[in-house]
Amino acid sequence: MAVQLGKRFKTIILPKVSHMFNKLFSDKYLLYTNVGISLCLSGVGDILEQNYEIFTEQIPNWNKERTRDMTLSGTTVGVVCHYWYKFLDRSLPGYTIRIVLKKIVIDQFVGSPLCISTFFGTIALLEGSTKEEFVQEVKDKAWRLYAAEWMIWPPCQFLNFYVLSTKYRVLFDNLVSLGYDVYTSHVKHVPVCTETKAKEL
Image (tube, rainbow, N blue to C red; front, side, top):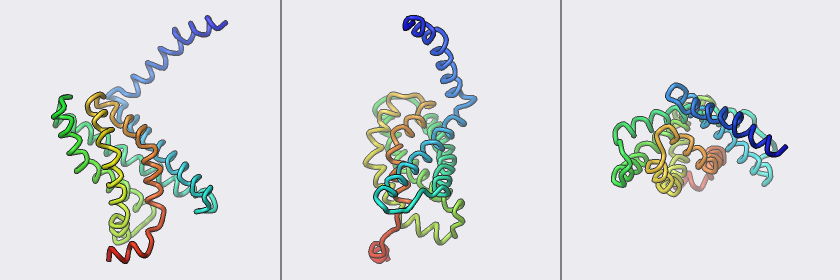
């Protein structure tokens, strides 16, 4: 019985899974795959963060609208990441250490601010925020995400740029960044204390 199941898995199931995987990461479907991955994990990150906030009694119950907005933000960020990596790899082709280090620097100084701005801009539109509210939130919170990115992404992006091909970059990003997505939700929805605002003013 076990032998038959193993043979069935090897000859029928595994080839189908492999075919589906290759199809999803083909040029034809890669954008949809990247957006889908980003969308799903952004939502999962918020659900995990909200469960923690409920457990620690920071919020009374699950906010569905918040999860919806965080999930939808993954759509725009996924699109930006998809085209950003394609642009970066076209501009700096190759896998040498020098090329990889250049990509990391450009990604941190250009790609990261672009993605963070896209995230806050998307959420502002979904929440109906004014331009002034959007600008203030970016001033209050974006730097925290950017600082966290400097701690997390340079070593991860070294692996991403040195080992993986372009089509797997967004997948790798999202697998690594599930914890970062939790933190993103935390930064977005935990109020900035009055004292911090006063210091910035």
